[in-house]
Every structure is written in structure tokens, then in C-alpha cells.
Image (cartoon, rainbow, N blue to C red; front, top):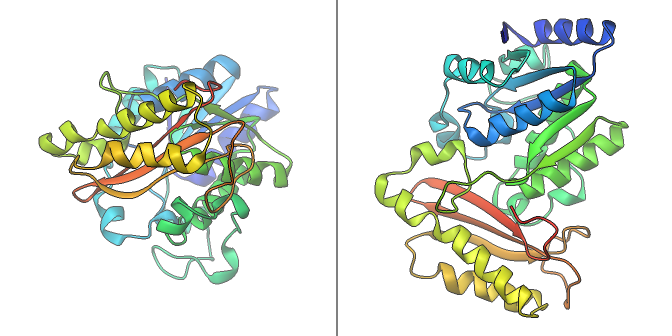
Length: 294
């Protein structure tokens, strides 16, 4: 049975008990509204560790849009029921003050010295379009790692740039191991996301165009195209006239992150897209070089 822990302090005690018993600990940080993609992360954590813990916290520090923060889906009770089906040991949530006691400037902000620098992989794309987003991600993940002291932490590949930021953070800390798991998709290719719940039927019908554009860029790669500008042009052409408002459609070297487009030709590549369907912002990515077919 999944234990529902009342606050971060209770989670810290639960994790300490697991370590004292000699159990390895897997951790899946989430913002809730769990779907099959989240559950796949938990299933892998359960398979690879003696005990697994999930956090559910809609982190205000990583939202640059107050409206987006307020609209983000929340269902802790439903999340806990889902986690029981996949063998999760415990789940916890909390308030910003509970996570950062004595360090909050308001209900949604910390005092200036409490934030963590996300590092150079936060530059460009998501970092450019969402001011302060990765600072908020790095700050809460660093705090979560302090609390749970897990052996392995599991993240989805859909948030590609985030996985780079978190990986850098973990290396600076000396752990934990960061395990990046493939993106889970709907049958029509749309990447699973809690934000998909906010799409209207018409927006949901348009949203798979993002994955179709990524797949078109991968076909050009397989045909021999290696110039990042040409590959990005393919993305943009496929997304034109789809009814989606494009934030970016770009190609990067996944092992040598740059804020701006790299100089070609590329030996490896990831294509990344962020677009809005009405007020709902969707992101996705695809490795073009075959290392990750998700």
C-alpha cells in the first residue's frame, strides 16, 4: 500500500528509515496530475530499487506565468490511488514554506539567496522563453534531493533540456544517479503531459502536429541531412498552418548544448519544439540520430 506522507519532513523520516534498513531508494519527482508516462517512471523505479518514493508538488518557483500556475491540474487523492497500482512505497506533497522553512519571501517566491543556479544548459530555448523557469526547477530538485537522499532519480525525456539541467545539478552534488526514461505517447503521437487535460477537443486534434513535425525532421536526418538550419526549417514548415502558435522549433547537439543553433554539419541531433494551442503550452522533442526513438 502506498503511504501518503503529510509533508516533506515526514518524507525525510520515511526515507531515512528505508536507508537505515539497507534498502536502495528510487525517487520520482512530479507535479501531479499523473498519467501513464509518470507511472512508467514509477514502474521502472520500483523495478530497480528496494523502495520508491514520489513527490507531488506544483512548484510555483518554475512558473513564469501566474495563470499557468493556477490552472495546472491538481488531484493528489487520485494520484495516490494510481501510485498504489504500480507498487509505489510512498507519496508526499507540501507547501513552499514546508519545503523551504524560513526562506520564503511570499507564498510563491523565496528570498534571493535561496535559489540554485541552474547552469549553462538552462540557456536558450526553454530558458529563453520562460524566465526563471530552470532556476525554479534546479532549486526545488536540489531541495528534494537533500530531503530524500535517493540512490536514483527518474525523469522523462519529454522535458529534454530539463534533464540536462538536472543531470548537471546531480553531478555537481555528487549524486544521485539520474535516469532518463523514454517519452510516453498517445496513439497519435502526442507526448503525454498533464497539460493535455486542459486542451479543448479542437486543440487536442491539432496537437499531434508537433510529433509529426519531429518525425519529418528525423526522416530528413535519415535521408542524410545534417545541417541544423535545414532540419529546423523542416520542423517549421510542417508546423505552419496547423493552428499552433510556435515558440520555437530548433535542433541542437544533445551532448554539447548551446543557447543558439550549433554550426553544422552535426554528428548527432535532437529536435525540440514548443508551441501553444490556445493558452496551453506543449513541448516535445525527438532524437534524430537513432539513439532514442521515443
